[in-house]
Figure 1: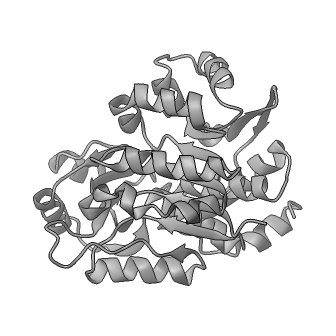
Figure 2: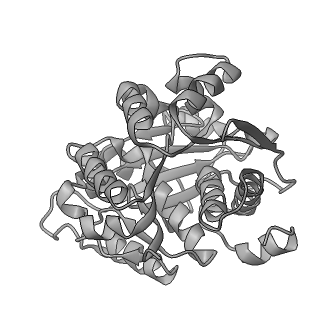
Length: 330
Protein backbone atom coordinates (compact mmCIF):
# COMPACT_ATOMS: atom_id res chain seq x y z
CA UNK A 1 0.00 0.00 0.00
CA UNK A 2 1.33 3.42 -0.96
CA UNK A 3 1.57 6.15 1.67
CA UNK A 4 -0.70 8.53 -0.22
CA UNK A 5 -3.86 7.89 -2.19
CA UNK A 6 -3.80 11.34 -3.79
CA UNK A 7 -1.21 14.13 -3.92
CA UNK A 8 -2.37 17.45 -5.35
CA UNK A 9 -0.18 20.11 -6.96
CA UNK A 10 -1.42 23.62 -7.62
CA UNK A 11 -1.64 27.28 -6.71
CA UNK A 12 -1.58 27.75 -2.94
CA UNK A 13 -3.94 30.67 -2.38
CA UNK A 14 -5.99 32.47 0.22
CA UNK A 15 -9.50 33.30 -1.04
CA UNK A 16 -11.01 36.70 -0.24
CA UNK A 17 -14.77 36.27 -0.72
CA UNK A 18 -17.33 39.07 -0.87
CA UNK A 19 -20.86 39.50 -2.18
CA UNK A 20 -21.21 42.14 -4.89
CA UNK A 21 -23.82 43.19 -7.42
CA UNK A 22 -23.41 43.26 -11.18
CA UNK A 23 -22.98 47.02 -11.11
CA UNK A 24 -19.88 46.58 -8.94
CA UNK A 25 -18.38 44.24 -11.53
CA UNK A 26 -18.99 46.75 -14.32
CA UNK A 27 -17.74 49.73 -12.32
CA UNK A 28 -14.55 47.92 -11.35
CA UNK A 29 -13.83 46.36 -14.73
CA UNK A 30 -14.32 42.76 -13.55
CA UNK A 31 -15.30 40.24 -16.23
CA UNK A 32 -18.13 38.15 -14.85
CA UNK A 33 -17.88 34.41 -14.36
CA UNK A 34 -14.23 33.80 -15.22
CA UNK A 35 -10.79 33.93 -13.65
CA UNK A 36 -8.53 36.88 -14.50
CA UNK A 37 -4.90 37.21 -13.42
CA UNK A 38 -4.00 40.49 -11.70
CA UNK A 39 -0.93 42.11 -10.14
CA UNK A 40 -0.31 43.33 -6.59
CA UNK A 41 -1.57 46.86 -7.25
CA UNK A 42 -4.82 45.63 -8.79
CA UNK A 43 -5.35 43.22 -5.89
CA UNK A 44 -4.98 46.08 -3.40
CA UNK A 45 -7.33 48.29 -5.44
CA UNK A 46 -10.05 45.65 -5.66
CA UNK A 47 -9.74 44.74 -1.98
CA UNK A 48 -10.27 48.39 -1.02
CA UNK A 49 -13.52 48.48 -3.03
CA UNK A 50 -14.99 45.10 -2.08
CA UNK A 51 -16.46 45.90 1.31
CA UNK A 52 -16.92 43.19 3.99
CA UNK A 53 -15.03 40.06 2.98
CA UNK A 54 -14.20 36.62 4.34
CA UNK A 55 -10.67 35.22 4.07
CA UNK A 56 -10.30 31.44 3.81
CA UNK A 57 -7.56 29.17 2.57
CA UNK A 58 -8.22 28.15 -1.02
CA UNK A 59 -6.59 27.24 -4.28
CA UNK A 60 -8.28 24.79 -6.63
CA UNK A 61 -6.22 21.64 -6.03
CA UNK A 62 -5.89 22.53 -2.34
CA UNK A 63 -9.70 22.57 -2.07
CA UNK A 64 -9.85 19.15 -3.73
CA UNK A 65 -7.22 17.73 -1.38
CA UNK A 66 -9.02 19.25 1.62
CA UNK A 67 -12.22 17.53 0.50
CA UNK A 68 -10.44 14.20 0.08
CA UNK A 69 -8.80 14.56 3.49
CA UNK A 70 -12.18 15.32 5.04
CA UNK A 71 -13.40 12.01 3.58
CA UNK A 72 -10.52 10.19 5.24
CA UNK A 73 -8.29 9.71 2.20
CA UNK A 74 -4.51 9.71 2.64
CA UNK A 75 -3.44 12.96 0.99
CA UNK A 76 -0.69 15.52 0.58
CA UNK A 77 -0.48 18.87 -1.16
CA UNK A 78 2.27 20.70 -3.02
CA UNK A 79 1.95 24.46 -3.50
CA UNK A 80 4.11 27.47 -2.69
CA UNK A 81 3.39 30.17 -0.11
CA UNK A 82 5.60 32.79 1.51
CA UNK A 83 6.84 32.91 5.07
CA UNK A 84 4.23 35.58 5.90
CA UNK A 85 0.91 35.81 7.74
CA UNK A 86 -1.27 34.45 4.93
CA UNK A 87 1.26 31.71 4.22
CA UNK A 88 1.14 30.58 7.84
CA UNK A 89 -2.66 30.52 7.74
CA UNK A 90 -2.64 28.44 4.57
CA UNK A 91 -0.14 25.89 5.91
CA UNK A 92 -2.04 25.56 9.20
CA UNK A 93 -5.36 25.04 7.44
CA UNK A 94 -4.04 22.31 5.13
CA UNK A 95 -2.49 20.37 8.01
CA UNK A 96 -5.59 20.86 10.16
CA UNK A 97 -7.64 19.24 7.39
CA UNK A 98 -5.42 16.16 7.68
CA UNK A 99 -3.36 16.65 4.50
CA UNK A 100 0.42 16.48 4.44
CA UNK A 101 1.97 19.84 3.55
CA UNK A 102 5.74 20.28 3.45
CA UNK A 103 6.45 22.53 0.45
CA UNK A 104 9.39 24.83 1.33
CA UNK A 105 8.22 28.36 2.15
CA UNK A 106 9.45 31.25 0.05
CA UNK A 107 11.63 33.42 2.33
CA UNK A 108 10.43 36.67 3.87
CA UNK A 109 12.81 38.49 1.53
CA UNK A 110 11.01 37.24 -1.60
CA UNK A 111 9.56 40.13 -3.62
CA UNK A 112 6.19 38.41 -4.11
CA UNK A 113 3.63 37.66 -1.40
CA UNK A 114 1.42 34.66 -0.69
CA UNK A 115 -1.13 34.43 -3.48
CA UNK A 116 -4.73 35.48 -3.03
CA UNK A 117 -7.89 35.19 -5.08
CA UNK A 118 -10.52 37.92 -4.93
CA UNK A 119 -13.78 35.99 -5.30
CA UNK A 120 -16.77 38.23 -6.05
CA UNK A 121 -20.11 36.44 -5.70
CA UNK A 122 -22.98 38.10 -7.55
CA UNK A 123 -26.72 37.75 -6.74
CA UNK A 124 -27.14 34.88 -9.23
CA UNK A 125 -24.46 32.96 -7.23
CA UNK A 126 -21.93 33.23 -10.07
CA UNK A 127 -18.36 33.87 -8.99
CA UNK A 128 -15.90 36.17 -10.73
CA UNK A 129 -12.30 35.65 -9.70
CA UNK A 130 -9.37 38.05 -9.90
CA UNK A 131 -6.23 36.18 -8.91
CA UNK A 132 -2.89 37.48 -7.70
CA UNK A 133 -0.65 34.42 -8.01
CA UNK A 134 2.16 35.77 -5.83
CA UNK A 135 4.81 33.22 -4.94
CA UNK A 136 2.59 30.33 -6.05
CA UNK A 137 3.72 30.89 -9.64
CA UNK A 138 7.33 30.21 -8.65
CA UNK A 139 6.71 26.52 -7.94
CA UNK A 140 9.78 24.81 -9.39
CA UNK A 141 11.15 21.30 -9.88
CA UNK A 142 13.20 21.68 -6.67
CA UNK A 143 9.88 21.89 -4.77
CA UNK A 144 8.92 18.42 -5.99
CA UNK A 145 10.12 15.50 -3.87
CA UNK A 146 10.41 12.59 -6.31
CA UNK A 147 10.38 10.05 -3.48
CA UNK A 148 7.09 11.50 -2.21
CA UNK A 149 5.57 11.40 -5.72
CA UNK A 150 6.52 7.73 -5.98
CA UNK A 151 4.42 7.12 -2.85
CA UNK A 152 1.21 8.38 -4.54
CA UNK A 153 -1.46 6.17 -6.05
CA UNK A 154 -2.73 9.25 -7.91
CA UNK A 155 -1.50 12.74 -8.70
CA UNK A 156 -4.02 15.54 -9.14
CA UNK A 157 -2.62 18.42 -11.19
CA UNK A 158 -4.25 21.84 -11.30
CA UNK A 159 -4.55 23.48 -14.71
CA UNK A 160 -4.24 26.95 -13.20
CA UNK A 161 -0.65 26.06 -12.25
CA UNK A 162 0.27 25.50 -15.89
CA UNK A 163 1.34 29.15 -15.90
CA UNK A 164 4.72 30.02 -14.43
CA UNK A 165 8.35 29.80 -15.52
CA UNK A 166 9.13 26.38 -14.05
CA UNK A 167 5.73 24.87 -13.31
CA UNK A 168 5.47 22.65 -16.38
CA UNK A 169 8.92 21.26 -15.54
CA UNK A 170 7.73 20.67 -11.98
CA UNK A 171 4.69 18.81 -13.31
CA UNK A 172 6.92 16.70 -15.57
CA UNK A 173 9.16 15.73 -12.65
CA UNK A 174 6.15 14.76 -10.54
CA UNK A 175 4.57 12.75 -13.36
CA UNK A 176 7.77 10.85 -14.13
CA UNK A 177 8.28 9.93 -10.47
CA UNK A 178 4.67 8.90 -9.90
CA UNK A 179 4.24 6.90 -13.10
CA UNK A 180 7.67 5.36 -12.75
CA UNK A 181 6.47 3.82 -9.48
CA UNK A 182 3.20 2.57 -10.94
CA UNK A 183 0.99 5.52 -10.00
CA UNK A 184 -1.61 7.30 -12.13
CA UNK A 185 -2.11 10.96 -13.01
CA UNK A 186 -5.19 13.17 -13.24
CA UNK A 187 -5.46 16.81 -14.29
CA UNK A 188 -8.18 19.44 -14.15
CA UNK A 189 -8.37 21.99 -16.96
CA UNK A 190 -9.47 24.63 -14.40
CA UNK A 191 -10.75 27.39 -16.73
CA UNK A 192 -11.20 28.12 -20.47
CA UNK A 193 -8.73 30.97 -19.91
CA UNK A 194 -6.05 28.42 -19.00
CA UNK A 195 -6.96 26.15 -21.90
CA UNK A 196 -6.74 28.96 -24.44
CA UNK A 197 -3.30 29.99 -23.16
CA UNK A 198 -1.82 26.48 -23.19
CA UNK A 199 -4.02 24.43 -25.53
CA UNK A 200 -1.30 22.50 -27.34
CA UNK A 201 0.65 21.82 -24.14
CA UNK A 202 -2.53 20.53 -22.49
CA UNK A 203 -3.33 18.31 -25.45
CA UNK A 204 0.14 16.79 -25.40
CA UNK A 205 0.03 16.28 -21.64
CA UNK A 206 -3.39 14.63 -21.78
CA UNK A 207 -2.58 12.36 -24.71
CA UNK A 208 0.81 11.26 -23.39
CA UNK A 209 0.44 11.12 -19.61
CA UNK A 210 -3.08 11.57 -18.21
CA UNK A 211 -5.24 8.72 -16.91
CA UNK A 212 -8.19 10.84 -15.74
CA UNK A 213 -9.25 14.25 -17.09
CA UNK A 214 -11.48 16.60 -15.08
CA UNK A 215 -13.19 19.52 -16.79
CA UNK A 216 -16.46 21.34 -17.32
CA UNK A 217 -18.22 21.55 -20.65
CA UNK A 218 -16.77 24.97 -21.52
CA UNK A 219 -13.21 23.84 -20.85
CA UNK A 220 -13.63 20.65 -22.87
CA UNK A 221 -15.04 22.54 -25.84
CA UNK A 222 -12.18 25.04 -25.60
CA UNK A 223 -9.65 22.20 -25.52
CA UNK A 224 -10.90 20.76 -28.79
CA UNK A 225 -11.95 24.11 -30.33
CA UNK A 226 -15.55 23.13 -30.95
CA UNK A 227 -19.01 24.32 -29.88
CA UNK A 228 -20.31 20.74 -30.06
CA UNK A 229 -19.97 19.02 -26.68
CA UNK A 230 -20.69 15.58 -28.14
CA UNK A 231 -17.88 16.06 -30.65
CA UNK A 232 -15.57 17.07 -27.81
CA UNK A 233 -16.50 13.88 -25.93
CA UNK A 234 -15.60 11.81 -29.00
CA UNK A 235 -12.18 13.48 -29.18
CA UNK A 236 -11.57 13.08 -25.44
CA UNK A 237 -12.37 9.36 -25.48
CA UNK A 238 -9.51 8.87 -27.92
CA UNK A 239 -7.05 10.83 -25.77
CA UNK A 240 -7.66 9.72 -22.19
CA UNK A 241 -8.80 6.48 -20.47
CA UNK A 242 -11.25 8.23 -18.13
CA UNK A 243 -13.08 11.57 -18.34
CA UNK A 244 -15.23 13.35 -15.76
CA UNK A 245 -17.01 16.42 -17.13
CA UNK A 246 -19.48 18.62 -15.26
CA UNK A 247 -22.34 20.28 -17.14
CA UNK A 248 -23.69 22.73 -14.57
CA UNK A 249 -27.31 22.22 -13.52
CA UNK A 250 -27.50 19.12 -15.74
CA UNK A 251 -25.04 17.23 -13.53
CA UNK A 252 -21.97 15.42 -14.82
CA UNK A 253 -20.81 12.88 -17.39
CA UNK A 254 -18.07 10.28 -17.23
CA UNK A 255 -16.50 8.03 -19.83
CA UNK A 256 -14.50 4.94 -18.90
CA UNK A 257 -13.78 1.61 -20.54
CA UNK A 258 -15.77 2.54 -23.63
CA UNK A 259 -18.89 3.26 -21.54
CA UNK A 260 -20.64 6.59 -20.97
CA UNK A 261 -22.25 7.53 -17.66
CA UNK A 262 -24.41 10.45 -16.49
CA UNK A 263 -25.65 11.58 -13.09
CA UNK A 264 -28.00 14.57 -12.65
CA UNK A 265 -27.11 17.40 -10.31
CA UNK A 266 -28.36 17.37 -6.73
CA UNK A 267 -31.15 19.69 -5.58
CA UNK A 268 -28.84 21.74 -3.37
CA UNK A 269 -29.77 25.40 -2.91
CA UNK A 270 -27.11 27.45 -4.69
CA UNK A 271 -25.46 30.09 -2.52
CA UNK A 272 -21.96 30.29 -4.03
CA UNK A 273 -20.56 28.10 -6.83
CA UNK A 274 -16.94 28.72 -5.76
CA UNK A 275 -15.24 25.36 -5.37
CA UNK A 276 -17.98 23.32 -7.06
CA UNK A 277 -15.58 21.78 -9.56
CA UNK A 278 -12.91 21.30 -6.90
CA UNK A 279 -15.22 19.34 -4.61
CA UNK A 280 -16.71 17.41 -7.52
CA UNK A 281 -13.17 16.22 -8.23
CA UNK A 282 -12.68 15.35 -4.55
CA UNK A 283 -15.80 13.21 -4.46
CA UNK A 284 -15.06 11.55 -7.79
CA UNK A 285 -11.44 10.78 -6.85
CA UNK A 286 -12.56 9.41 -3.50
CA UNK A 287 -14.71 6.97 -5.41
CA UNK A 288 -11.82 6.06 -7.69
CA UNK A 289 -9.34 5.36 -4.89
CA UNK A 290 -12.06 3.44 -3.02
CA UNK A 291 -12.60 1.15 -6.00
CA UNK A 292 -16.11 2.35 -6.87
CA UNK A 293 -17.69 2.14 -10.31
CA UNK A 294 -17.81 5.29 -12.50
CA UNK A 295 -21.50 6.01 -11.81
CA UNK A 296 -20.93 5.92 -8.05
CA UNK A 297 -17.89 8.16 -8.53
CA UNK A 298 -20.12 10.65 -10.37
CA UNK A 299 -22.70 10.55 -7.59
CA UNK A 300 -20.03 11.15 -4.96
CA UNK A 301 -18.71 14.06 -7.00
CA UNK A 302 -22.14 15.62 -7.41
CA UNK A 303 -23.01 15.31 -3.72
CA UNK A 304 -19.68 16.84 -2.67
CA UNK A 305 -20.23 19.70 -5.13
CA UNK A 306 -23.79 20.11 -3.88
CA UNK A 307 -22.51 20.55 -0.34
CA UNK A 308 -19.97 23.24 -1.19
CA UNK A 309 -22.34 25.36 -3.32
CA UNK A 310 -24.81 25.52 -0.42
CA UNK A 311 -22.64 28.01 1.50
CA UNK A 312 -20.02 30.71 1.01
CA UNK A 313 -16.48 29.35 0.60
CA UNK A 314 -14.79 26.53 -1.28
CA UNK A 315 -14.10 24.09 1.57
CA UNK A 316 -16.74 21.63 2.85
CA UNK A 317 -18.56 22.52 6.06
CA UNK A 318 -20.73 19.42 6.44
CA UNK A 319 -19.45 15.90 7.13
CA UNK A 320 -18.99 14.58 3.58
CA UNK A 321 -18.66 10.99 4.68
CA UNK A 322 -21.96 11.20 6.57
CA UNK A 323 -23.51 12.87 3.52
CA UNK A 324 -22.36 10.03 1.27
CA UNK A 325 -23.64 7.48 3.76
CA UNK A 326 -27.05 9.16 3.89
CA UNK A 327 -27.33 8.74 0.13
CA UNK A 328 -26.27 5.10 0.15
CA UNK A 329 -22.87 5.70 -1.41
CA UNK A 330 -20.72 4.01 1.26
